[in-house]
Length: 568
Image 1 (tube, rainbow, N blue to C red):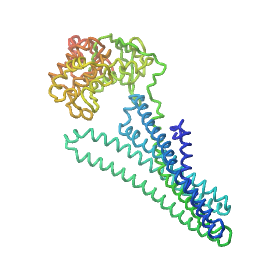
Image 2 (cartoon, rainbow, N blue to C red):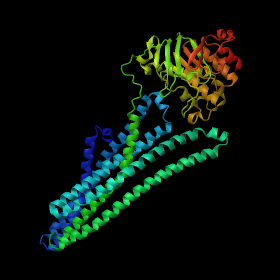
Image 3 (tube, rainbow, N blue to C red):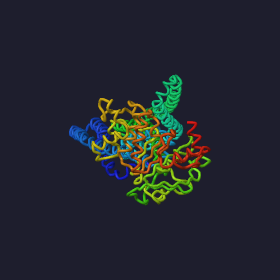
């Protein structure tokens, strides 16, 4: 999978490798030049001075070439790696945006954040190690062995004896390192998710004097992360120490072996320096390769982590579906059932409902009656598991949901604002909105009294998730954001729940006014707020037990709605 990330960029990496060979060549030439010079001196050759100058000149030229070659090597490698890093994060964002809403609800946002930030960073590190360190290791070993076998097959065979030892060390430590990397990665993801939850719950925690409990919980979590990190550090440290000692001992043996060959006249005296330099180089490269194992293991674990998202097939695929160029707002629920994955019983059971264009429909009932699920069905976040939902006479399964949602405006129960100004939050996703239209919407949403009290008005910064504003102020902004879109269908999920009585009355009047121009679905617990709805659907245990206008339902003294209203 990792190589697949770099598809189409292989040629640039080959060029980068070529410039790496050029810039690194002095490291390989120096032992040869050193051995040659020692041999020229010890052999007493008449042209020794000339040969020494030639060797030194070649080495000096290669050293000067190092500067431009190093620049080109880093330029090509870094540009490719950084581009893939950005592209990978962008791909993850695109994938998350295409996943079904039901799937994303099952994943903590902290886990997704960890995958986009930490795991991509680990893959970038892995790429750097593979395309730089691994390239360096392979080239150095190949050059050292090539030069060695060209001069002495005996020494070459001795060098090869080191590789079984390296293989043994890799096999011994690979499995435990991978195991601890997996545990550490999962602990980090879970910690990231819990930290985000902790920050969001600070007001609740403080209000109930639960600081100590929350601190203890996070301390326990942090200790688990530390323990997993410690276990990973120990296994990696043991691996590094054992491999280093083994190779250093082998290096001493190499020195003794080549010295004995020189004493017996098998090799030239200067070649002892050459072989020792190359063996030291090989030992260093093999040690580096073994030290790369933890990084490679961590990077591959991150590749698997990202693959968990990229390979998910629970997505909204709109290809081949009918485009939606206009929306009248007629809805027909034909024996609709819905069951959340993993649940035993249906949440919506045999719902039959006809909604005319520009009609306002209110869903009321106790918690768990199925009201929110009805909203998810209307928006297309979930599809009927049985029966049909027809929109303007077309099955919701057959229309392009992206096109369809461009005609919707949703005011959720939990107001979601992003860091920025009030104006930016209201205009989110729109363009070409005049100041006159913006001010008009602010008046309709009952936002004007709020803006008049703020020194910067519409340019007031709302803070992270709207933290600088009250719940009622945030909800009015959310309503204004819905109204600015001039929707054909508006969905209000407890849209006035955070407003005081006066503001609620103002916003309800505004909603009633806007509802005349679009189909409106209202979810409400406050039964008084749905008095003007054209149709009230009373939900109970996933069924529509009563339907009618407010007056019609209230006229039935034995009805469920009447009992709810009287007990409110």
